[in-house]
Image 1 (cartoon, rainbow, N blue to C red):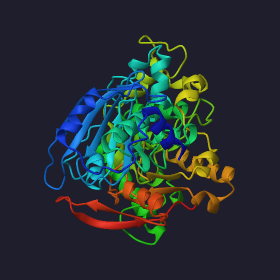
Image 2: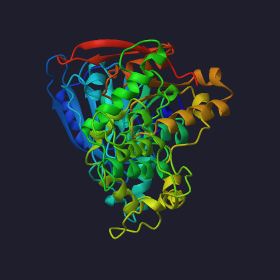
Image 3: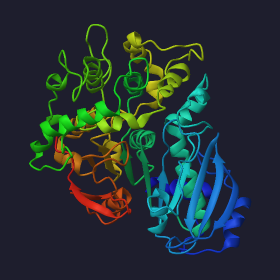
Length: 481
């Protein structure tokens, strides 16, 4: 592959052709002295390299932390023994600013799962320091915005390849990228902007259209936690039960989960309190707030400003995003507009349509909406995407619309399925969790597609019970329309 040849040439290690599947602690620690300054497009420096002793079924691994031009911090973890010859690079979340929280000893750790399967793994910080809901780092900082927008996952992958090559004496024969939420946006950016980088890509719940995402999030948060908040836990429980009573049977089984919420039409009239009633019903204000969350932001004339991600069946998730109300405000102040207005800016809900129109500059850097994936396809790449139907903030409709648009560009569903498949998971929340079978090994499915040429005709997941074991399993097929 072209990207592997470039890394080999950049590091200058053609002579190390024989595979090396195990290495010593001394070799791990010596990576601090290794010269990675000549890695093309990603001159890098290793800061620390140490052996981490394994626990339980997790073997010992070498952990390397460094940075690549300019400020992209990366972390590489490599199995001391049993490397499968592959590298999995993982994305960030929110505003990035650090490696995603990840304890490899946890049974649900993405990195730990990959290490157990023999993968070398890598992560990055998006090219800056911040918390996940703080956009102040981007204030008048276009260079950092470029890293966050698309360079950081590209650069981290190049640096990780070089570290893997130096350590094992051979290049990774397959390199994958996996991310969810902002990491899912990064994943699509890699397929669109760097189609030669990765053999396979996992794009989970991609936050793909920046100009729509935060006006919708502001609208949602204002109705859940802001000045218009009227929906308490009792109201959400009542609303959710009403939706299930109306729509759970549509898919032919009564299981408390909607297979395709698009088929559910919600009329809140029957559960809106009438004069003289005040129990087992929604107040008119609560019913109105629920309608506005389902519908998403609209301007004064009733025209839609941005897509809503809140589908019928997702109601219990709405209260789980407490604390996000400051996130869209931070993005409006420091990131959406050019030049950024700064701390003095106070968002006005009546002007959300203007905010969408003014976000063209940040959209050009951050949004991952280009449907022309022909170069990625022609290079042999495979794209596995997923999203939960109960994801109330990640933009379900935008993800489905993008998938449909790609099909039109590629030449139909059948041609698209050869390299790109989207799985909508019933009952799953944002990236994971929820009432559905959300525990799914997406990396194993992608690896089987790329390495064994076994396309994922179905994906099987499980819902964890109180003991962590499978309470039930469920199989999902790729979205048909």
